[in-house]
Length: 396
Image (cartoon, rainbow, N blue to C red; front, side, top):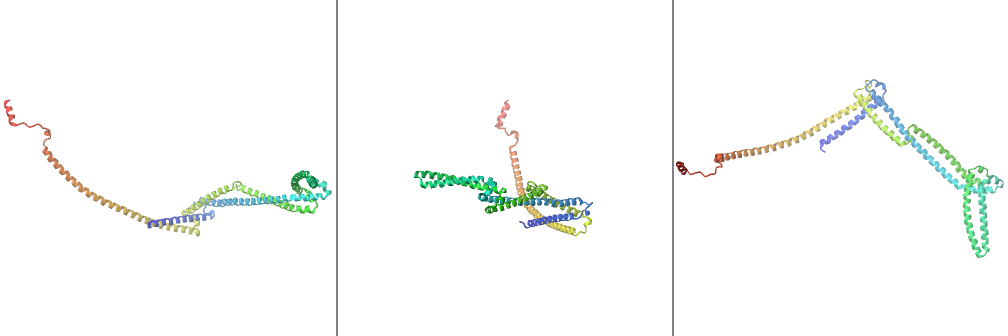
């Protein structure tokens, strides 16, 4: 870039930077003034601007606090929900563990029931289904044992038929065993959900139900924790509702962020306007304030520096314009010289043409003189002889 243009660009950048800094100083002045008590501004031209800035200074922290509170409440609610989910997971795991031990509890309880004849009537309703299945299993085993014994002694053909019968019975017995396992599990679960647990006095039963009881205790504790978390979540929702953010909190925060940005913009403009107003018409009661005096001095010094830079820009621009005009003048001189040369050539051509004109006019006059009268120019008959014409005249 041409040095002078580069200098102008640098000066303009410096002026823009100084102007921006001055706007910051004026805004800082306005903000400083807004922090002063209203007494100094009552009845002055600055009173309206002062009150506007004060109001915005009050609104902005409230808006920021509202947005921050919504974000914090949402984070707290999410943290509670994470804990609720964890409680549910742990409860589900413990219930699964208890499901696994219910079969063993059913087996031990059934054994204890069979070993306590005095409690048959009292506890019979819990184990009747198991007793039927147990009886069927015993019958099935007896039948299989009987058939197996007979296959060892009977004829070959009869033994083949009995082996088929044995295979069938073993399949049915396996199915009964699975049904028995399911019934043990069901009975164990029913016992655990009833008052029977505390009334079965058997050390094996007590040992079997111990992990179940420990898990059940943990489940109860987790359920209580979950309920407490739910209650805390309800309190959080109530607070969000007060803040107008019970639904779509992210949208509400975005709306508040826009409001905050607009308030910040208005506050900045208000502070700048108040600073400009004060500089134009200072409040007498603040004339000795050192902070204000320092800011005004900085603003004034910056303006002087900008004025000097603008003056330097005008000098550089004048030099560039003068140089441009010099180039234009040189072009004009060259054109004038070219035209002058052309005019001299045209004058010579003109003189030659004028002389040629005169020569041709003289030639024309000479030829016209030779021509004679125009009226006889077209007469072409032969002229008569003079003697003959005279004799003819006399005879007549």
